Length: 113
Image 1 (spheres, rainbow, N blue to C red):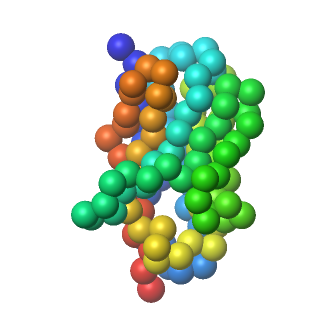
Image 2: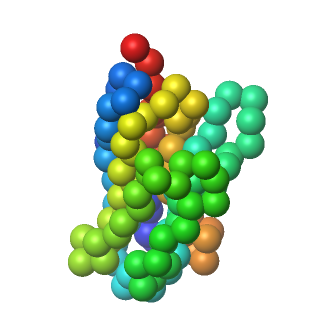
């Protein structure tokens, strides 16, 4: 069974950068859309970025321009680059493969001076 494992979270100052990784435990063939979500206490998860099998990114929210999603199909890994981090970026970031109904356990990002 494929598992997703996120990493790369941590504490960053406003204006700083982080790169989150989402690694699949075995090959998914790079054939599925992968999605990054963020959840904050008391709120539902919100989609922040997705990437198609062909590498086409989408950013449904206001993070466009500061967040960059990418993928390396050979490494079965998706990435989320966060630049110019803002306090409102704070939350638990989880990755998801909708077609496989797979979720990772999440990684905490905290943006604070």
